[in-house]
Length: 355
Image 1 (cartoon, rainbow, N blue to C red):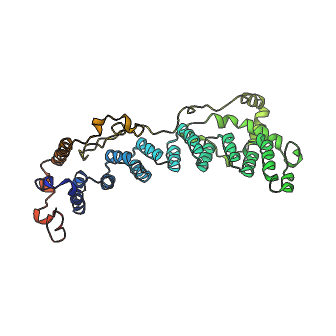
Image 2 (cartoon, rainbow, N blue to C red):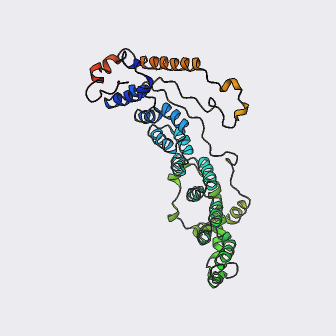
Image 3 (cartoon, rainbow, N blue to C red):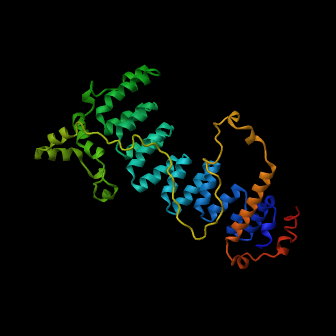
């Protein structure tokens, strides 16, 4: 087989690669094949992350990035998975990856990027998980979700209720003025909002917990919200004389902005060495390809004229590279790839080498 296959013309190697794949020799088929789509499918099946990454980078296909991300996660290559999900614009997958890793900075960058891209559901959930309720309410208002924003403010940020009710009234008044006038503002009708002043104090009382987030490893020690009574906690703090100091300490407390200048961009991945890795020359990277911004007028005339002799030399070099790649499988390949010439020319594949 090692003597027959290198002699096959390059335009026939894809057919030979499919034949090898059907015979179960996928590793050899990956070296023989010249079709990027076929090579990518083989690389995914063989868990060849580096080869699959190179092909996906060339094709810029979201589907390929998603397939590679799934494979990278299964192989615990999370840095590669993150880059693939970014290139695939899979914000849901990025949220799952970031929350599983407990990476608050990555979640914040994801929230900012997804909001810019119009992925409001992911952005809102990311802000909510980080305790950034102000950004979540602002996102709801920017998308015209004033009722949802008002109820969220009533539950978590009562100090924002009046502002949102005014926006809600203005928006609803365009459709039904009577319904808009029926909306009550707590600053004007405090009697309709029982314990509203206590709720304002509770917002300040809990602000430190939102701003100063605990490490994910401490989740076992955090009491569940359903088991807490914030009013009772405030009452106990008041009896101890510490309530006023707690409320005063959080007046100027703000969130840190560790990622304000860090956009959600992919980073260079690293690949673990694979003993069964296929030795094939990588495709040219973006730096090797001619830039689309360069006009044809900037190219010298000598560069435009085709050189037939050089083309023949390049084709010859590629054929020699293919021979070297195939020889890299070692001396045992004659035993593993036991395919006779008659097998290549049987009745089912009699047209394999017609050309």
